[in-house]
Length: 62
Image 1 (spheres, rainbow, N blue to C red):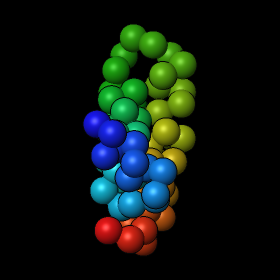
Image 2: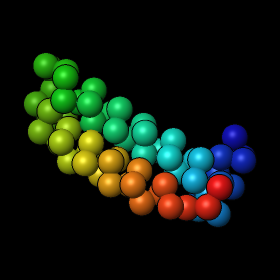
Image 3: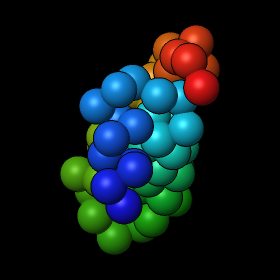
């Protein structure tokens, strides 16, 4: 677990890609659930932020 936070602080690709992937999955989940309107409202921006973040962090060093 400390390696994960150490990788985040050193801007390593692996941990940041995991965070971006979780954001994308969270955005898709928010889009498909029918119960909470605010989650549906912010689902597109959450997915978009995760996607842009993934594109950016794919240029980070291993």
